[in-house]
Length: 420
Image (cartoon, rainbow, N blue to C red; front, side, top):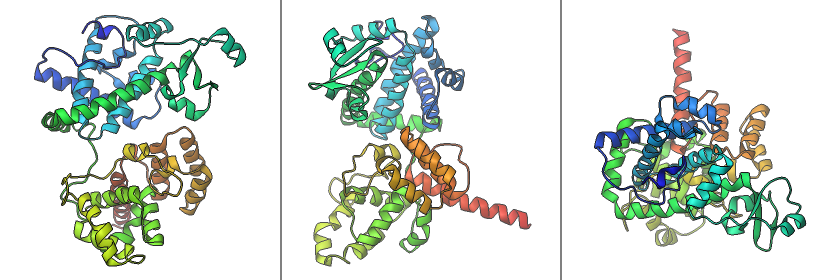
C-alpha cells in the first residue's frame, strides 16, 4: 500500500488491502462526497479556490506540494474513499462518479511539479516516447518537451485538432500529458465499474443507503409518489428542458421517434410520473398516424413495456441524467442528446432567440458551449426563460422540470403576498 501512496494522484489500479472501522469508512465517504458536491456545482475552479472551498476537508492536502504527515493521511483517505464510492456508484450514476474522479485527478496532476509528474509516470510503468529531433524539426515542434502517442491513446486531443499528427501518431507537449493519463484512468474506471456492478450488487445497495444518509450528493431520480397525467402534457411542455421539448416537438411533427429518442424522452416522462398505461396511449396515438395499430403493437409496444420494467428482464430503468445524455453520440438525422453540446452553434442560436432568450444570455450560452460547460449553459437557459436564479447547476432533466414548475409557484406566491 505504501508504494501505491507515494503521490498525491493515483490511477487506483489495485484494490486496497486490510480492514477499516465502519465509522472511519463513513467519515471518508462523507469527505469525498463533499468534494463531489463542490466539483458538481462549481465547473471552473483554480487550485487555490478549490482548497478554499474544501475548508476543513482533509482531501485538500492533496493539493499541497510538500510531503508531510497530513498529506500522507490524505492519500490514504483518498484511495479508500475512491474504491468505496466506486462500488456504490457502479450501480447508480456511474457517469457522475467518473466525471468527478477525472476532474479531481486532472486538478491534482496539473498541480504537480515536472519531476513529480515524470516520477509518477515512471513508477506506474507507463511508457513515454519522446519526439525525435528529426520529428521536431519536420513538424516545427519548439519550446518544450514533446511526446508522441498512437492517436487512439489521446482521442480528445485528436478530435480537437490542436496538435500535429503524422503516420498515425499525435505529438503533444508535456503540459498536455494529463489528457493521456485521464483517458487511461477513464478506461480503467469504466472496466472497474462494470466489474463492481456484476460482482458486488448487494454491497452497492448498502453503500448507496449510507451515501443517502449524508444528503450531500444524491442522484436526482423519479419516485413512486410522482404523478403526471397525459392530459397535462401539452400545457406542461413549457417546463421541459430544451432537450425534451425538442423530442416532444419532433414527435408531434413526425409522429415517430428513433430508438435513442424513445429511450431519452420515454424515460423522462416515466420519471415525471407518467404511467405505463398512459405512456402506451400517447405513443400509440402518435405512431398510428403513420402506421397501423397492428404494426405498433408488433414492433413498438414491447419496447415501452420493457422501459417500464413489466416484461423481459424487468429492470427498473430511471430517467437519464445529464451526464448520461452528454456522453451519447448523435449521428446526423437523430434528434436525441443535449442541444447545448450536440447542436451547431448557429442552430442553437436561432432556437434560443425563438425561445425569447435575450441577446446577452445567448452570447453567454454560446460561450459556455464553446468551453464545453454544457450544464452551465442549460442552467443559464433555464434562468433566462424562467426568469429566476438558481443556486446550483442543472444536472437532470427531471430536476429542470421540477425547478421550472416551482419557479412559477414562487412567482405566484410573491404576487399573492404583494396583493395581501
